Length: 260
Image 1 (cartoon, rainbow, N blue to C red):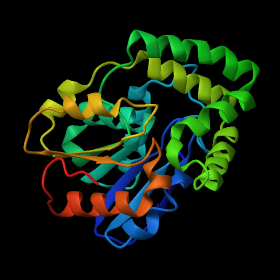
Image 2 (image 1 turned 30 degrees about the vertical axis):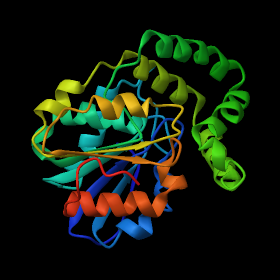
Image 3 (image 1 turned 90 degrees about the horizontal axis):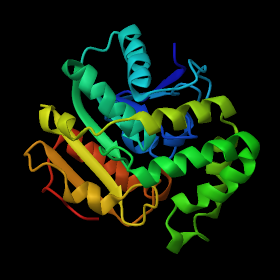
Image 4 (image 1 turned 45 degrees about the horizontal axis):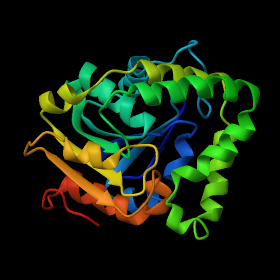
């Protein structure tokens, strides 16, 4: 089973899925702001953190199935599910397979679109670099995931993100890339999901086309979206603001498409 940790003492359960080349520890800065309202289940996805490698390709469906095994083992009947980046893709796969156990889904700097041809080609090219020069891949790529206007202020967090990425198993990274290439468009999941849907995006996100994601969100009363002044890593760049949105939206209400 996947590795996980539990924190917090709230009545509501919030399952947190990290992104590509991350692990369960990325939520540390948000945790103090969430733990009073939620019991947090922080999971290491396949091939990341302390979770094992399952196959040569870690599809989003495989990740979703393994996450379900964790929640089943904890006997959680209904819960909130939040995923950052790749974790958001796994969240959508989970919502498609097991909607009956979800109160809400949060796409945290993520997308419901499949990769376009350009993105798939980039991922294919990255496989060779990951195999042959993984440190170079990490050191070159990680800084681009943060707000370029705040690089000096974020230097320590960028280095921390690099450390986490470099600790990820090489085979796990490759399996995840292959899985992301294969994923399909999940717009229909948003349209069919009956619980609350929260979308949090960054103005300076170089990994996700935030404007496209927000402009094409289905016009439904159960969807709320936010655009923050940060890059791809709101959990490090805007931890308290992100937590405030999550607390408010999953437990209360704010106007739709509120911009911070």
